[in-house]
Amino acid sequence: MDYSKWDHIEVSDDEDDTHPNIDTPSLFKWRHEARVQRMEEMKGKTDAVDAEKKRVAAKLKEVQDRVKKEEQKGGDNLTELKKSLTEVEKAAKEVDKKRRALDDEKKKQPQNVDTLSRDGFSKTILNTAPKPKEEDLTEEEREKKMKQFVKDNQKLIKEYGMIRKFDDSKKFLMEGNTHLASEETANYLVIWCLDLEMEDKHELMCHVAHQCICMQYLLELAKQLECDPRACISSFFTKIQVADEEYKAAFYSELDAFKQRIVKRAKEKIEEAMEEERLERLGPGGLDPADVFESLPESMRKCFESQDIGMLQQIIKELPEEEARHHMKRCVDSGLWCPATDDPATSTEDGFVKKEDEAEEEEIYDEVK
Image (tube, rainbow, N blue to C red):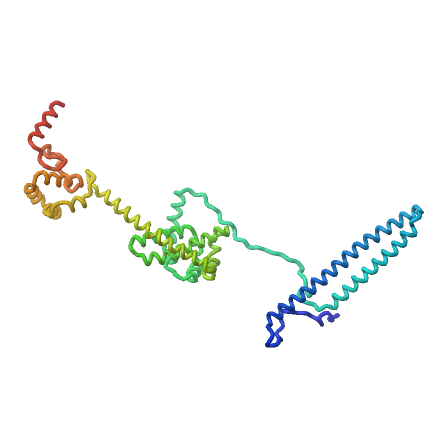
């Protein structure tokens, strides 16, 4: 075996012995650039010689064919053509000599990382997660799916919602809870945040909101990569911690905006609930019994609080008739007072006993009918 080719090996980036005053990385870089430049120069020379050899070979074949044809015809240009053939053959020998000289020069050059070995074959395999399938569900089916998911995973979702650190969230999801990386989890966290704010638990709402935005960002990353959200859990929680300031600023800006939307929506829902409750309280005349009760004289309020009908009748007698009728009509319209409907002598508008002339007119009207 001839091991002489291993006597001269040029390696530019794994030498340890350098002078302490020399910048080792710069030295290695310079050596590497010099080696690459020499290799490019040698390649240029080789390409030039190969091109010249190809050109001379084509010329030689052309002259040989012309000499052969001229010999068959016995033409007068045979001598001149043979002279041209001799010159071309001489040029071909010169080219061969240059090629051998280049080969010898290559052999004398030290071996390096690019010439010691070559790829036997090259193969690239990309492992891509399958694209998530979009479910074509109706609104009713989506709602049913959401309810079932929450029923099966509510405890785990709330446990995730109480986590704060990115690493802890990543660990929790990766350890058997990857199925929580879903739209259902994000939707439930939004509803939970809204409920907490309506219960006046603002600090806890802010805590859960952080986890909600994390889940929404994870789902958005999966959407951009067109892959299953479960495959993005590790990459997202790693990315958010090493991301540039612009990405982090966008994350926390979205978190603040989300909390503001929750606070606003919670206030609206509370107002809507109060209005709905008020509408349910309205009496037959469209008045709110709470508002009417506050507008009554204090003596009448005490009667309603104690539910003392006798006292109420006595106070009504003491009040001016017009004022008493005004208050009692409002009580009837709000439902605070329900006059007897089976007594024809009692007015259904204010609960007062009808006057004799009103009763007589009603009897005449009934007779005419």
